[in-house]
Image (cartoon, rainbow, N blue to C red; front, top):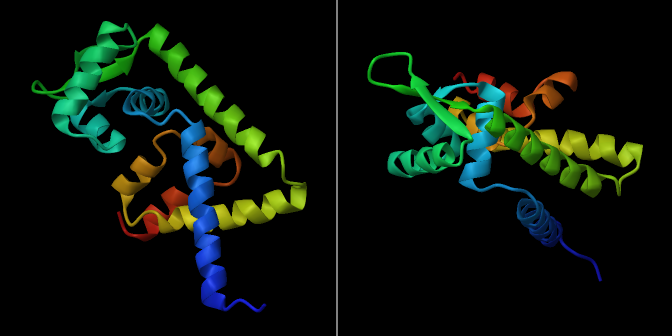
Length: 170
Protein backbone atom coordinates (compact mmCIF):
# COMPACT_ATOMS: atom_id res chain seq x y z
CA UNK A 1 0.00 0.00 0.00
CA UNK A 2 1.39 3.38 -1.02
CA UNK A 3 0.93 6.29 1.40
CA UNK A 4 0.43 9.83 0.15
CA UNK A 5 2.82 12.56 1.25
CA UNK A 6 -0.03 14.07 3.31
CA UNK A 7 -0.51 10.77 5.15
CA UNK A 8 3.24 10.58 5.79
CA UNK A 9 3.26 14.18 7.08
CA UNK A 10 0.30 13.48 9.36
CA UNK A 11 2.02 10.37 10.70
CA UNK A 12 5.24 12.32 11.31
CA UNK A 13 3.34 15.11 13.07
CA UNK A 14 1.60 12.51 15.23
CA UNK A 15 4.91 10.89 16.22
CA UNK A 16 6.50 14.28 16.98
CA UNK A 17 3.51 15.10 19.19
CA UNK A 18 3.88 11.82 21.05
CA UNK A 19 7.62 12.35 21.53
CA UNK A 20 7.07 15.92 22.72
CA UNK A 21 4.43 14.81 25.21
CA UNK A 22 6.56 11.89 26.41
CA UNK A 23 9.58 14.14 26.93
CA UNK A 24 7.44 16.73 28.70
CA UNK A 25 6.05 14.05 31.01
CA UNK A 26 9.59 12.99 31.96
CA UNK A 27 10.83 16.49 32.71
CA UNK A 28 10.13 18.73 35.67
CA UNK A 29 8.32 21.50 33.85
CA UNK A 30 6.06 22.99 36.50
CA UNK A 31 6.24 26.70 37.35
CA UNK A 32 8.38 26.15 40.45
CA UNK A 33 11.01 24.24 38.47
CA UNK A 34 10.92 26.75 35.63
CA UNK A 35 11.38 29.65 38.06
CA UNK A 36 14.30 28.00 39.86
CA UNK A 37 16.15 27.07 36.67
CA UNK A 38 15.44 30.49 35.13
CA UNK A 39 16.89 32.22 38.19
CA UNK A 40 19.90 29.88 38.09
CA UNK A 41 20.53 30.80 34.45
CA UNK A 42 19.71 34.51 34.55
CA UNK A 43 20.42 35.64 38.10
CA UNK A 44 18.08 38.02 39.89
CA UNK A 45 14.89 39.00 38.12
CA UNK A 46 11.94 41.20 38.96
CA UNK A 47 8.60 39.52 39.45
CA UNK A 48 7.46 40.92 36.09
CA UNK A 49 10.42 39.45 34.20
CA UNK A 50 10.07 36.12 35.99
CA UNK A 51 6.33 36.12 35.23
CA UNK A 52 6.90 36.63 31.54
CA UNK A 53 9.62 34.00 31.25
CA UNK A 54 7.73 31.37 33.26
CA UNK A 55 4.51 32.25 31.44
CA UNK A 56 2.10 32.72 34.33
CA UNK A 57 0.00 35.63 35.63
CA UNK A 58 1.34 38.30 37.96
CA UNK A 59 -0.70 37.03 40.91
CA UNK A 60 0.41 33.44 40.26
CA UNK A 61 4.03 34.65 40.16
CA UNK A 62 3.65 36.46 43.48
CA UNK A 63 2.20 33.27 45.03
CA UNK A 64 5.03 31.24 43.48
CA UNK A 65 7.66 33.61 44.91
CA UNK A 66 5.92 33.56 48.31
CA UNK A 67 6.01 29.74 48.29
CA UNK A 68 9.65 29.55 47.16
CA UNK A 69 10.62 32.16 49.77
CA UNK A 70 8.84 30.20 52.53
CA UNK A 71 10.74 27.08 51.41
CA UNK A 72 14.03 28.98 51.64
CA UNK A 73 14.73 28.65 47.90
CA UNK A 74 14.60 32.33 46.91
CA UNK A 75 15.19 35.68 48.55
CA UNK A 76 13.64 39.06 47.84
CA UNK A 77 16.04 41.97 47.46
CA UNK A 78 15.67 45.57 46.33
CA UNK A 79 15.05 45.78 42.60
CA UNK A 80 16.46 48.07 39.94
CA UNK A 81 14.03 50.83 40.98
CA UNK A 82 12.19 51.70 44.20
CA UNK A 83 8.97 50.02 43.12
CA UNK A 84 10.43 46.65 42.13
CA UNK A 85 11.82 43.66 43.95
CA UNK A 86 14.58 41.41 42.68
CA UNK A 87 14.13 37.70 43.20
CA UNK A 88 17.35 35.71 43.68
CA UNK A 89 18.12 32.12 44.51
CA UNK A 90 19.32 31.36 48.01
CA UNK A 91 22.22 28.94 48.44
CA UNK A 92 19.62 26.21 49.04
CA UNK A 93 17.75 27.35 45.91
CA UNK A 94 20.92 27.23 43.81
CA UNK A 95 21.49 23.62 44.85
CA UNK A 96 17.85 22.70 44.16
CA UNK A 97 17.93 24.37 40.72
CA UNK A 98 21.20 22.63 39.84
CA UNK A 99 19.63 19.27 40.83
CA UNK A 100 16.57 19.98 38.66
CA UNK A 101 18.75 20.83 35.69
CA UNK A 102 20.92 17.74 36.24
CA UNK A 103 17.78 15.55 36.38
CA UNK A 104 16.53 17.14 33.16
CA UNK A 105 19.88 16.55 31.47
CA UNK A 106 19.97 12.91 32.62
CA UNK A 107 16.44 12.25 31.33
CA UNK A 108 17.24 13.78 27.95
CA UNK A 109 20.62 12.05 27.65
CA UNK A 110 18.96 8.71 28.42
CA UNK A 111 16.49 9.34 25.61
CA UNK A 112 19.09 10.24 22.97
CA UNK A 113 21.42 7.40 23.99
CA UNK A 114 19.30 5.25 21.66
CA UNK A 115 20.81 7.11 18.69
CA UNK A 116 24.14 6.46 17.02
CA UNK A 117 26.44 9.42 16.25
CA UNK A 118 25.08 10.01 12.74
CA UNK A 119 21.46 9.83 13.89
CA UNK A 120 22.31 12.24 16.71
CA UNK A 121 23.78 14.78 14.29
CA UNK A 122 20.75 14.47 12.00
CA UNK A 123 18.30 14.81 14.89
CA UNK A 124 20.19 17.84 16.23
CA UNK A 125 19.89 19.61 12.86
CA UNK A 126 16.18 18.79 12.67
CA UNK A 127 15.53 19.74 16.31
CA UNK A 128 17.32 23.07 15.85
CA UNK A 129 15.18 23.83 12.81
CA UNK A 130 11.99 22.90 14.67
CA UNK A 131 13.00 24.85 17.79
CA UNK A 132 13.54 27.95 15.68
CA UNK A 133 9.96 27.59 14.38
CA UNK A 134 8.65 27.94 17.94
CA UNK A 135 9.58 31.61 18.26
CA UNK A 136 8.86 34.89 16.57
CA UNK A 137 10.51 37.08 19.19
CA UNK A 138 12.69 37.38 22.27
CA UNK A 139 9.98 36.71 24.88
CA UNK A 140 8.92 33.50 23.17
CA UNK A 141 12.59 32.48 23.09
CA UNK A 142 12.88 33.03 26.84
CA UNK A 143 9.73 30.98 27.40
CA UNK A 144 10.87 28.12 25.15
CA UNK A 145 14.31 28.04 26.82
CA UNK A 146 13.12 28.47 30.40
CA UNK A 147 14.47 25.04 31.46
CA UNK A 148 17.54 25.05 29.23
CA UNK A 149 21.17 24.90 30.19
CA UNK A 150 22.23 27.95 28.21
CA UNK A 151 25.88 26.93 28.42
CA UNK A 152 25.12 23.75 26.46
CA UNK A 153 24.03 25.76 23.43
CA UNK A 154 26.94 28.18 23.78
CA UNK A 155 29.37 25.25 23.77
CA UNK A 156 27.61 23.81 20.70
CA UNK A 157 27.85 26.96 18.60
CA UNK A 158 24.88 28.98 19.77
CA UNK A 159 21.22 28.66 20.54
CA UNK A 160 18.93 28.15 17.53
CA UNK A 161 16.02 29.66 19.44
CA UNK A 162 18.03 32.78 20.31
CA UNK A 163 19.20 33.00 16.71
CA UNK A 164 15.61 32.80 15.45
CA UNK A 165 14.54 35.52 17.89
CA UNK A 166 17.40 37.74 16.65
CA UNK A 167 16.30 37.21 13.04
CA UNK A 168 12.78 38.22 14.03
CA UNK A 169 14.22 41.61 14.92
CA UNK A 170 13.64 41.56 18.65
